[in-house]
Length: 475
Ligand code: BYC
Image (cartoon, rainbow, N blue to C red; front, side, top):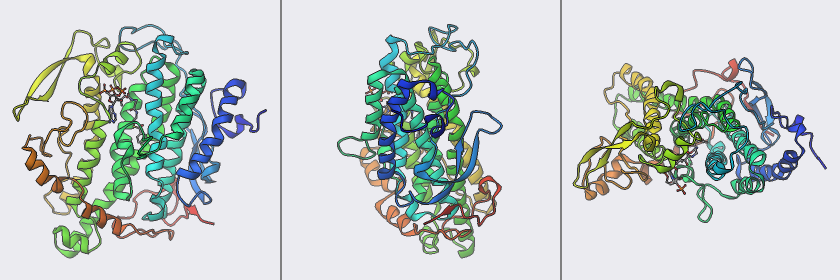
């Protein structure tokens, strides 16, 4: 017997009300999701009223509304972008054939694996970020954190919907497992590396939302091309929310850089120790956090040469981001050049069949997109009269996956001796001492309109509200 009015409780455009089997599956899963959310979602603030955006439709002109809601009462909805009439497969061997509304038996296990991998990252990020509310630099940031968290929750719902609606018993079991694996758990970790890294401070949070959510953008863009139409439509709508998460990252890092520059001017010094003594985060430390999160996020694209990627492309399951912008959608007789270590301390170029290089093609689009924030931050640095820019390290730096995995490479991309890597990595990656310093800055500020000393106030408000708006009301 239905205990909830799903049509009302879960805003959706998938006719949940008309599908009793799906309702039953979700009725089973939903209380487990809530238990998970209360145990491993945002610590302490389950009871607070938070000013949140909630997706209510897929109408481009008004897809969400804003209002106060307690997070456990958030209406995690299920939305698929509008169905395109007569959509055909846009790439691979089946190019031009009609897309699938159901999962073809021969692709069932690969599609399930991709949906599970995507789904796994969503609750993982909520778990990683669960303690950040206790050290938020402002009420504005606290609200943004919770906005990101509930939307990652909705993205989990999006994948669980697909598992329940299209994969029968296997899908239901996988949906349970999505709540059973936990970020950083020794026995049951999350599937992909970055999602087991702790995010214990706000500098890491902004790096994660800048870099790792951007991996999300590119993976979702690739899946939005899928011949499995419900997956494609689901991912297309998820991208709408994902854009805001990256904006949180870009603005957060920008505000930290801005504050650092103000302090450097005030004290008339760039010396990292002096900047730290004045309560700001020195630029070399910010660079070390960039190096860490960028390299970790690069691994999320998989190996440069991948038969998995070639197969999913050939079968129409996963395309390239913005596939329509490519000229040849078959990518059959083409080659792609990648760099590999030559085993003698140098590198050589290798030609790979294009289909096998899809992970690398997607990674390169990601890297180009990562540059945008640096242009803005470096403009701030330059305008303040300083000459040392922030930069993206070489994609070969600190890789653990792919041809560069485990290779000793400096941030400028040069291959170095292993001993040199060991002695110099402390100047390239966050150290224990960096972590301790950053954590020492993490003191909660929740007075409306006030902001911690290590980050500049936000330039833009949420939904045009006043700067001292009470975005979160505590009880
Ligand atoms: N860590 O052929 P390979 C997001 C595994 S983020 C651990 O090189 P393939 C979000 C790989 O799974 C977007 N394992 O790669 C962001 C495979 O294992 P199996 C998440 C890794 O298969 C912020 C093996 O190595 N979405 O949405 O072509 C907040 C050989 O793999 C890693 C997706 O990832 C790693 N870094 O591609 C919230 C989309 N890298 O199968 C959310 C779905 C590779 O042999 N996933 N491996 O056991 C995929 O498309 C693919 O699974 C991957 C790997 C791109 C991840």
